[in-house]
Length: 159
Image 1 (cartoon, rainbow, N blue to C red):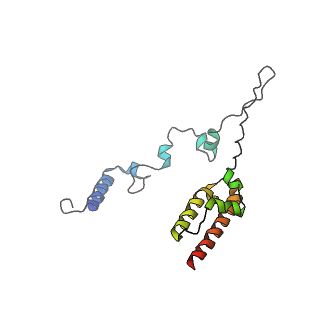
Image 2: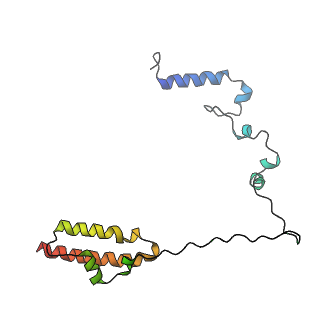
């Protein structure tokens, strides 16, 4: 509160005083509360042709280049090299159940906690969202088999 007024009230009074002090000619095209004029104030000095609808777009286009004459040297355009295809990691090629079981190394002494840790560690390197799109099918197979093996080991621990 400034001198018995809130900050908002003092700002409103200042704006009202500024509005009253402006002359009528400059206020005619302004919106109440804005300090700047509308777009036609900004357009001063711009060519009349570019003020027509769509002309501003055409003004910014690059002019067409004329065809090369026989005297001019024709230079070949550089060809962008295609990106090399990603190489599948070796572990994603192993999709057999026995190979995944060997990677997980589930033993009779594993607890529920260690089995969950093995699941998280396996998912960290094999989850389909973490590999290139070309290898997602193999990653999905690996994750399904690993989850199946871990779930079966957990069921056996629960008995």
